[in-house]
Image 1: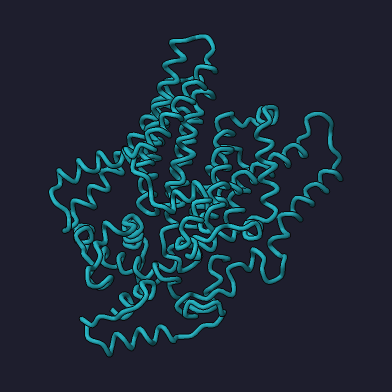
Image 2: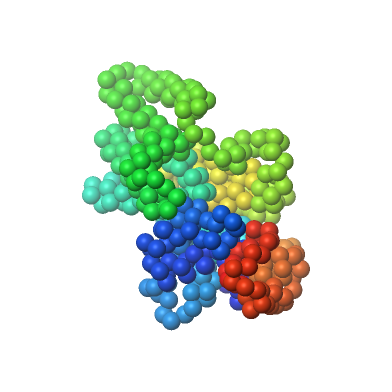
Length: 508
């Protein structure tokens, strides 16, 4: 219900990009996937137009189109697109429950699902009308991580292999839905680096990393090949395929994942050959791999990502490009913003990280070493990268949610199931009351800026003209209707690109 609070002002798509995504999805529904792949949109970005399948989030349009044709039940596509992020966000809450349950148990999973459902930054990037890439990208990315962790934890032969393959496919889908899903490649790669030191079943670990990496890269190459080969602006299909086979592994993401997998295999081989000093040999190999990776990345052989991705890795880069910093969602994160988004969860996340470092706690709660390690890896990475851009606070939220839910579940378990001496009922009740009170505070305080009301007072963008006023008017909708009725179909209307999405979709 929190995600649907803007409905009090009207039932419309929010922001600007969702209108293009709606138009692209509508084209796919009406004309089919083959026509969509060959579609060169000349209604926007005059005079060159836009090759849609190459320059947009195809999986978002394909997923929405498929789900609409299955579950649309006579509703209009426009209404379906408005509700789409709310439904996907609700499903993602179930996914993060399953993922954190795999890591830290059912209690931690339930808390994670609750925290995800009420997180302000998650809601801001997935409220009603937000028909953009983030909600679906998070869904696919987290589901891929869950399948990978579940396969590694269960180790059930064919079932685990199926999960690993599914995880690789879904991670590729997530990357095609939202470029930010590249974030999940980092903790997965670092997790592969740590696995040889945490697991003794080396054969299964090797197959896990190889299958996951191969499937992810294969699906990504095939997907990009399908997009590029169908584009009217491209040359031969064989040249396109050869280009992709080279460029994807030579990109930083492909190189990182392949390098981590190669290290895992090399580490296992060295440990089999050299029985003594296995830890020292593994650390030496890791150091050599890091130095080699830095050298190759610096040589120019590897294609570096765009500036904003590099800035996420090194927040100080922002001082070299003020234009990037001028974009509101690329603004540098501040302490007060982080505290508003996370509040008391920051404290519980710190407690969770501290407790995960304690081996004794891990044994008592039966949290396996590799699961605790992954939680720490994704936790620290998300918090680090969220310090670069406000927009990346989404990943900070995922990290804080994982660590804080584990922290709360461990605290509750230790109090209610004390190992050394029995705890009185009064003490247990008081402790639980304190925990509940701390978690309730950000929901009710401050009065007009708490989590429960974070999404209220914010109309759909087209209803308030993109201003900060909590008003609702039909001025922009009427303007679009006027343009549609009073201008020629081939008229060229100049505007800022954001408003161009309104004009091309509503005024046609």
